[in-house]
Length: 209
Image: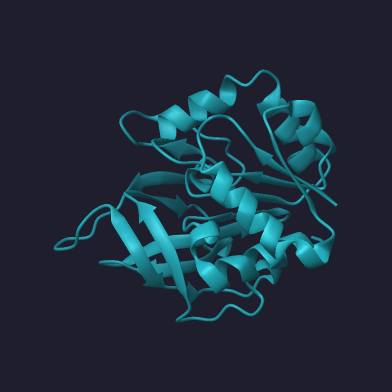
């Protein structure tokens, strides 16, 4: 199984690569970090990390010649399992509002808006307890109360509640995991979330939507 981690100069690729290699030991997974849309198009799993601001990440992805088209064809047309991480998850939305209004991939309807947490520090940084909203194969063995590691000031507000798989409480509900069809995204960093993160990655590598 070939797993493509998309390199567009906007993600924590070294840590993500190590975590996927560790979680994929029993799945015969070949983890490839690539900026090449042809490699992404041939992958059996695709992962889109993302660190930084939504507009910068979206622009950087669009500047990799042919990558957006390759991802769209693989994920939407052929149903290749896809995971977005942090801003990589936020870019699944219809629109982001960080700094300026920016079009997302629009693979899961919704908007990325600032976290409103009166009396609490923003960014939302550190460990927080997950609340599982609906079962999903990628969340198998992960329960409400399990911890994940977050670093973000903006959150994905889904248009359809059925696409919200998990949230955390930070001055109110804050989206943690979204998904539909063959697509999932995590606001937290699974590569930094120790046992929970490795479990989620292993589940993703076994998932056959």
